[in-house]
Image (cartoon, rainbow, N blue to C red; front, side):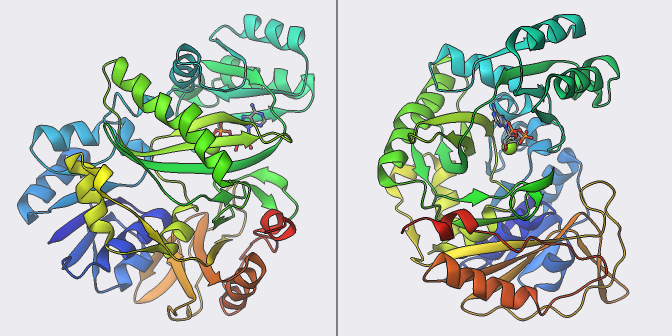
Length: 424
Ligand SMILES: Nc1ncnc2c1ncn2[C@@H]1O[C@H](COP(=O)(O)OP(=O)(O)O)[C@@H](O)[C@H]1O
Ligand SMILES: [Mg+2]
């Protein structure tokens, strides 16, 4: 059978790579794909991004299943379009994707269903927002309501920063429609973890735990990014915490959506903040897998993922049990010069070491130009190492990192430091 993965990042490369390992899969199309998916002979890039044209393509090529990677096509209704045309697709409908595409929707939903999250209020009026911030004090968090590609959240440590963020979004419209409403919420201290599950409308199948690193520089310094590295499993997610997150957050979310007439299908990602006492609160929902969490998670997943997706589309996820490589997988993102502000494109990338049992490199912002691999986006590659401990996985990943180079390459040297410092 032939499959289709929609998207062009490291997440999509990892999903396509995993799906292509199935003996019953002949080819995985990736739309539009990147320089890495272009090179793999089990994958084929398709230069289409319009969702109706993608449906035409899937119909014409007899694509058996489609998996959608990023949030933008989901929020635009790609799943609705595919379903209307009788095409099998895994992802949330446009209505279900509101859990990610509107932070106000998500917060109001969590409040209605008693799902633990930070206290908040939503504003479209700048004066009222300023007054709320003055009343509550800093630190405080200002979030654009809509999709802002990771640039819509300001964790304001001072009142001045908070007021600036409000003006940037509500007065100066710097984020356009996405920032025309803002959620202002209580600052939560603690450690973050990513909790990702697959949902078929009724049943929930949890994936392995993971943790990413949002800041650009070592020691969680510097600006926020799309993610500079991730690893799985995340030891902070103990079996007890896992059970609690399922009971208090994930299951009430799926049941709550159903109660409100919206069947949730697709990946569901809860971004968690876990306080010093181990209590989890929901920072946000994503209606897709994380990038770069997908890369280490897919590197650890055993078995035929195409069958899992098939069950997810058929509503029979309760019949699936996932099998995980017991090793830790740790992914280091290699980013372009001047990422995240204005990443430079067109830098020639050196040869990338071949995949091995303990290492694999997924592409993101890469492109083949005249037979040569060059950078074409902010996050360029994600190098994953697998080993029996976090420290050994770091060693394996960084050994590969040291064999790759391009002008302006930036990466963190400390991916996994929290887990490495934790007793296992
Ligand atoms: N209430 C909060 N308290 C402290 N930090 C927060 C809070 N909300 C978000 N953050 C920080 O900001 C980051 C981005 O926020 P998030 O809600 O995940 O939005 P997005 O991923 O859409 O940018 C989080 O990963 C976290 O580090
Ligand atoms: Mg987030």
